[in-house]
Length: 218
Length: 218
Image (tube, rainbow over all chains, first blue to last red):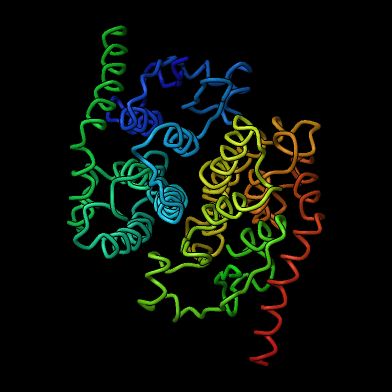
């Protein structure tokens, strides 16, 4: 059975690969697992059928061989466990790769998302400008730490792993913000990951969905 | 070799079990693994020795049998993999338990931490009161979804698992805020988890560290 994932029928990111199906598509491409996609509307997310799969009404979900899970991090880890390519065989290195996944979603991503959410939801609030400085600073602290760890390395810890995949998926939310530019090692790291053929295939696949949705409404 | 974890010598949470060593202590207690603690100061966190273990200068870290990792979620998952008790043997149930861990740290925790950070860092800002309403609303949405999923169940998915452990560790940040009270199923769920003997032992252990630090300065 090919895995089935869910993704937005008309993604609010306009095909920039920032919706959370992107990391899952990328992981599936890295390990060479073909998959199917069920596209959902915002109304679908509220349905009780979808809530059974995703209690918070989000995408993506993943179903294959009796496994039905949600949360992009959990799905990426599960996919990485199915085939070689994203998780080191050595137990200690495997544990470190997983540590970088959690660092991506629980240490690096929150200030980045908070910054994006403020740009999106609070732009008209009287406090917007004053808060942006605080938020930028919190993101910069994380990027400086990440830059120090990367130093001259290609990836965070030896070969490319699930840790790099999740970290880059998170850092890509800063593309176009001008924030990454202050950290050339991090910027180069993101570019290196985006150049991977598996990333390119995943990006093209989600982009095609968005373009089809634009065609449908125009 | 007994695992060695790091924790704050003088935790800013004043012994309320909100520092990130708490989830790790709790997991170790649940599976019955004795451990040692190396206490660190805020100055220690900046040291290059600590940064090798924790690139973002945080606690906790975990070292045992050649494994050296950071991020409480990753450590809890690693500990759960060492002994039975926190991860179901069935592969599909195991994947769901891990999905709830990621839901805890990347879907439920961010708005809760954002709310706490605002209370802590932005209380004197002119925008504080107006923003609290927005932040409370984001937290309430997550709690309502969680409440709907819990319904009459004791735990999120069958037996108590790493998913519940991380979720409760996250929800405890709301203790005393008055926010949980609107969701009796969630409030009862947190209380049920806190009543577990393993939680009690972990809580007492971190509390003792705080009390010793108070004694040292008074």
